[in-house]
Length: 291
Ligand code: AMP
Image (cartoon, rainbow, N blue to C red; front, top):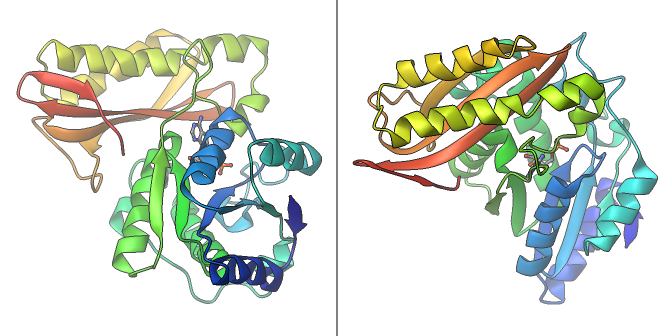
């Protein structure tokens, strides 16, 4: 596996692969790779012939006062893990390579980027969509992989690709969890032992929402309120938002029907955790679904 730092070099790698008749896959990450990232890399290895994993802690998606400076970084471990998962290139550009100048042009997600995570982090998705556009233009992949763990991000990136006619196909991989249900996240490293024990309550609270749907409840507000109450009852997780929205475009659904996302964010000992379930609701049937 090669490590590449320059845009020109990763583009040359990608173009050479395609000239040789090979397809190219990209897995964008911020590093501190875990089994969730590795599942996305393996999915790209199965679908494409040449796989690049980008490791770039994107400063423009962090607001002042967020965790940019302490975000976990371990490039040597990332290199080893990406290679074991079958990646061909680790693209780890320095910040100046992606942002030689302050961006003058931004990719703005519009209203769906200002709700849910975007309400708490108003400039977050503008930073995400801008860097994803840059990474897609640098690597020019045939396929790009994202995780359902960050469901709003996946929906917004799909919209970016569709709205701007970007010539790339998108794969969304299911959320990889620890055995106790906690969704893997690089930020879980911020949790202390007590926080780590309490963190699976976020997922368990979402399961309460799914059980309500399975019992026939279709009022979105009632489901959100019950999940929120369950979170608050833990005494340690402070709920931010809980919502049931259409999986296609994050619009409100009430009564709940079709393919929906049940999303929640909560703060645990100063650490912000997010999680979601994607469900297909058809009549009185409720089934797990995919983004
Ligand atoms: P990050 O490094 O946190 O920016 O994540 C990079 C990619 O990995 C994003 O597409 C995430 O949605 C995805 N990802 C993060 N955590 C998980 C997980 N537990 N399961 C599946 N994908 C994940």
